[in-house]
Length: 197
DNA sequence: AGCACA
Image (cartoon, rainbow, N blue to C red; front, side, top):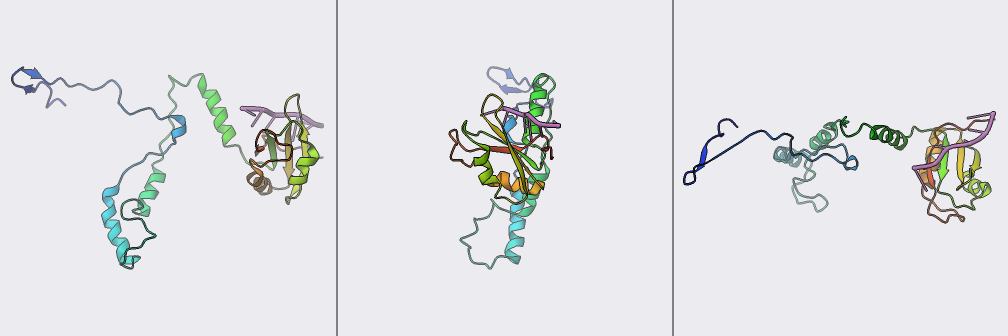
């Protein structure tokens, strides 16, 4: 920078370069949803790896299944992409009051697996019987309870093992019941395990 | 987005 500062670039007008550091760098702030991964383009490595691969795995003829060259260049690139995960930096200036909400949401999304499931987005006429019809078919089913707490009903379903609850959650996620009037049910791990009798 | 029962 200093090497060029003050250099004349327009001899007629005598204009002179003026260079200084920007007050902040120009990289855009990462939006929360855009993911924690930093993409590093290392395509310059591709040629060596291509050679390696051709020598070992490629029969020599052009393979229609395999896209050419650069894109899926090699496994080392992929490994690198996964390991350069950048830290999520909490900016103290912008996140002071929002930090708690953000944290709670994060915890909820990554809810810890539990053998009790929380089921929401049920229709107003959903009955415990109707839900039990579906859920009790799954191995490890323990018990089901529906609460209606004034508004829409929610349900809690308990299983013997976390793995069995997980299976039900993924299996029935977003699925419709005869009584559903607002889309499929929404299933999460419950925040606390159902109390057994 | 909404999480009770003891």
